[in-house]
Length: 265
Image 1: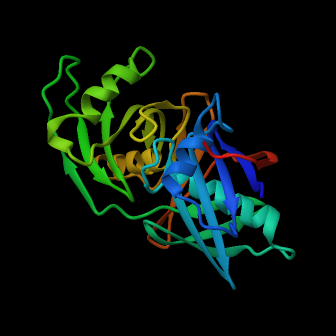
Image 2 (image 1 turned 30 degrees about the vertical axis):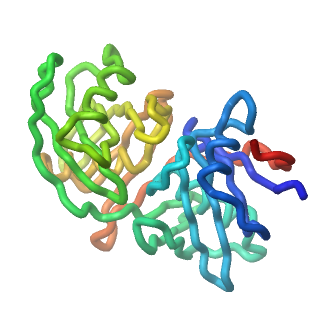
């Protein structure tokens, strides 16, 4: 029996979503097979979404089959639920993820998801040949190292990111690496550019919501911000704001196509 799937992209971070799979599949094998851009559908990771009555459960797996929390994946699932499942639109619902139960708010057709609170924020220093000195180690559903720099455009994100991703300090879990350039901070608001090396994908991705959230918390610790706009590698904009002591994030999502998978290799 073919498996129905949906292809979504969240600011270039792309996913294949499976909704209410009626058969149990080896999830790691499914993720590796489907993510392959030559022999599969092609994506950064897969989303397995289940609905039990009014509860939604989401599991994310990277293209290498490892499981993690993924902010862009969660946003994509929220978009799919709001646009594709509800017969009558709901402006407030919840998604149960590996990072906990997260709220989704819809305001004027814009979908905001609650991002996980950081388990910890630790200032870090790792000797490096690039002379990066401003950095923090943060966990927001998954582990991130946020590095502040004055010039983000010239960074070799693949090789520089791998240096930190596999650094002994962060093993065995490893770490996602976010490079940020702050363009503007005033009256609790910030504008920043960001580029991210994602573990599990093992490359730079076009955007990463959990990395953006981690970077927001980094700026909050250092500069006491409450609102921010982050610009990703492909110039997509993400809007973040603290409301009711929670961080909410909005950014672009598109449903690209619907298809059927006939074989898992």
